[in-house]
Length: 191
Image 1 (cartoon, rainbow, N blue to C red):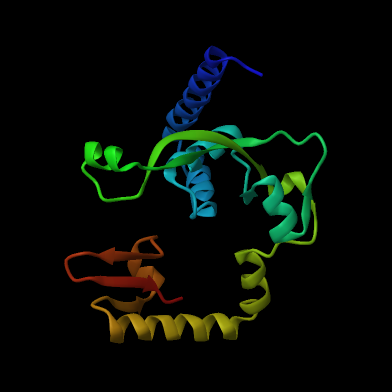
Image 2: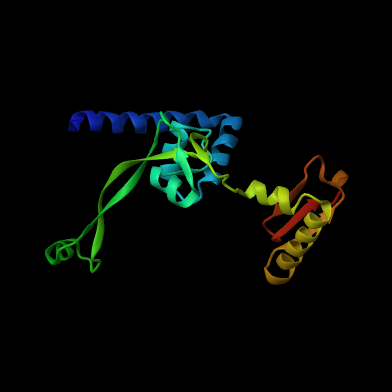
């Protein structure tokens, strides 16, 4: 079992690695990759998304060892290297601790531990459906996309203070559309 100094050094190395990856984001292609990673992990904190990205920028869907087995009927491949994320350590507070912290909460976060998770690419088993599968299946033909777009546009125009309109692409000087904050208007190339 590693000693406290080894664990502290490992944590510092993990944070430094995450910081290095974030600094590389000044390159626009890297930034797009980062945003794609961010979009994939909407249920994780920004801190954990940074940790995942730093350890495996290609990760798409991550879960713990047992969660892959129970929730997705998949198994982690032998020899797969885990990705570590930070998980809160929650402690039940005594009345004295509640008074000292000036809170009525019965529980509080007292620290974090690093738990292993695995990317879907490190697993095998039943297929995991994604948003891409939905798009391929439900929006493959042009009519479904057009009706969905028109319904969404009508909803925005009628139920919100946004106004959506189309103009010919030639009038947009190479852009595909824009948002005008002063008028709350979204203009899209109608071609």
